Length: 162
Image (tube, rainbow, N blue to C red):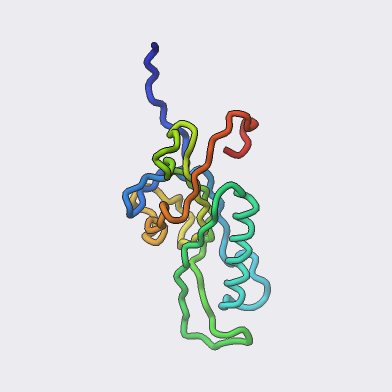
């Protein structure tokens, strides 16, 4: 038998969740929270439309993983309220990340299964979250409750969804 050295998988980043679980960020999409804001101002109803759009997009783009929203922090500056209510500001960068980790079910073969979760969150900068330096709310995600195991299929096309 040959001994093969363990080769690390390529990942954008590795995060350690508050639970101690290590997760891999395999895909990350960043966008400006208000980059496409039509005339008007940031407000609660507009923010909800933006969040729902991100959730729909994440579910469509990553159909084999559940989608979770990390509730964003909201700021309410002391400004005049317009027709849609008070000014409500979300962090400037909207993020959609595809994460994976080891299988949740210990009965699953660790070579053939891993767990997946797609996460939508907001952050103040365009930095890639990494290690223990990621936003606290992102590291607090309850992976065991939210993620789902996924079987790696040997018949999947190269470059296709795992």
